[in-house]
Length: 370
Length: 234
Image 1 (cartoon, each protein chain N blue to C red):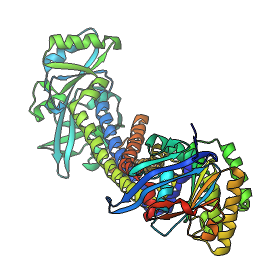
Image 2 (cartoon, chains in turn brown, red):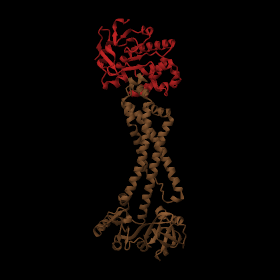
Image 3 (cartoon, each protein chain N blue to C red):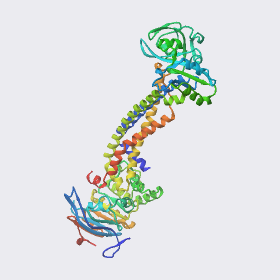
Image 4 (spheres, helix red, strand yellow):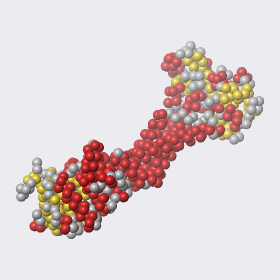
């Protein structure tokens, strides 16, 4: 109890300094949580596009980005005929721009594709899809920002397309995208006879390993990955994740420097107190415990405050109409744990030098000269 | 093993053998071969002008500093080795300083419990000891008060309680009444003598007050870093 009191007393003694330290950690944690959650959500959404009614994705081996992947139509046809495959849907990804929107994702799909079959059609009829080369179906948000409604002709990229449907999905990328018939997309993006990926639905999930081995044997330049494998190994996702943690980590380091500064000041201004504790039998470990305890308390309060701020901020982002479907406020327990541990680690790291300094305080000098 | 004193009057609990100590890289030599010993239960006053080495000697006995030369031992054990320091500070010696050296944001009770926290004493024993000492020093009704709210005399009595919490065998007091007025000083000193006598504690006290010093079993005069045994009074 006295030990805790010694820790708390000093924080209360310098309230503003303590508050600034807590705020530093809190905002770092909030920033990390926000960045990581948004990017995890984005990755989840992108994975969701690929895993719509499918378990495996087949694409060109060793491409850095799926936009550069070319899967020949012959492969789609052959794989679709394998007995273990329920259906194989080719998807071509493309990116175009329009007047006010630098990036619009286009999906070249067949009429049988799960995205077309299972989406909620707000306007139009799915049976009309792929009847004409210039027909497109817009995601609801894309229709909103392109100010398009059913029957309109809208300029997309270098072409003008006829809107024959508007659909609503829970996925932000799909909701902000444009769906074209596969052949139209191949022509539009100059990728005749190819798709970016094939999404595979197996008759029996247990056949996944056999399927992947057969892809490898039959098409050495293609690779088949289960959805979770793909999410883990896709280099773009890795880069995004690494970026998110690096940005968050930088924030946390700044917060940690704040804690270090506070703890250094804390030790310098309580040299006499440290000397008194020493004279009364406190060991080096006990003195370090007081210093580390103080920094840990700052970090924990900061982390909890930061998590609250971050979660509130994410919910606020979710309410922004322009970000509808893009922000997924599903915070994984593992991320919460990592963020709290990192905050704690930062606090402890910030207290290393101050604790070392405190352990070296010579009681006799501190008591003599202060 | 305890050492017998030179005159055979009892166990030697403190001993300084040819102790030298200097500061500022040898520019100021405070102790120049100090020799003396204290037997168990004695009250000893160290007198002498400021800077003669009284406080330094107390710090050496308490393990807060190390001699440049010579040996300092407590209860027969040479103490200027790091492994002994914690045990020494937790169980064998207690310190009372001129400026009480209490932590102002803590209460009287919390300040007194610090040595027991350091020593890992169980709470029940610590509380019982605290009750006993605060009763003896007349501070029972002030236990929950913060140090800022205590008078000078109360603070010094609190410091005395704290120093005795772990039942040390030796009390090292550095001008314990130096910051108090004459009347309070007399009261606190009376209490100090009374408690050390009842608890059987050996007292070594540095003081300028010869009136108080005269009430101790021995008065040792320090002069130019040495102890003049010839002026021992009892």
